[in-house]
Image (cartoon, rainbow, N blue to C red; front, side, top):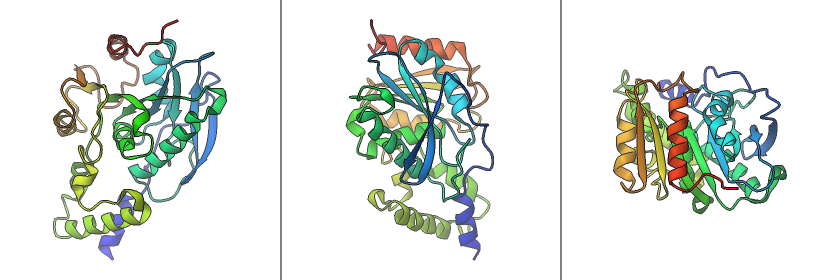
Length: 278
């Protein structure tokens, strides 16, 4: 059936991704989560330190997440990089949803809360997400670790799935309604604890509404996502909780190393009192 073929295509994993990260400074640890094995990479401080968990974007990888967070590790944070299912070293071949990645993130946060990897148990984490990784980070607010998220660091974040989906379906208006219904049914089978009843449920604010400090590092212009995702986030978050830093030299992808962005991020963290003190 044509509709089913489109549904399978939409739920496929990435057609490509960056190479796995191989670095003595960022060793890989394999975890076995609700959808099988996935890797995390660690860069840890000696003794107690606050923790940032970073999630890379679609078809990107942990090497790019490493580039975006090296300034955080230098500033005294423990940094943990989550490698998405179907990316890098992952052999995952199941149906791909953002919720499946969120469930991996929740499994990782379970481990951190219990003091895994030789770390002290974490009482709260800062989530860092680029593009789809930002969507995953915000979606974690629907899960069991909502109260443990202290802040969000979001780079050119995706915040809504419906415009992404409708972009893919724009050439098939006759069957788009049937595809959306089939996708909702497939989602609810895969993730019954976070079932959805309309496309509004996969967009901010239904997807998640941050109630902690948020720092957005925004490509200006964002040639991949445009303005709709940032606008949705600004409409959802209290103005006193969100700060947006824009840069014309920051691209949606392709600039994982960006000194001006790193300086702006560290300045914001310092102003908010998140920088570790000796």
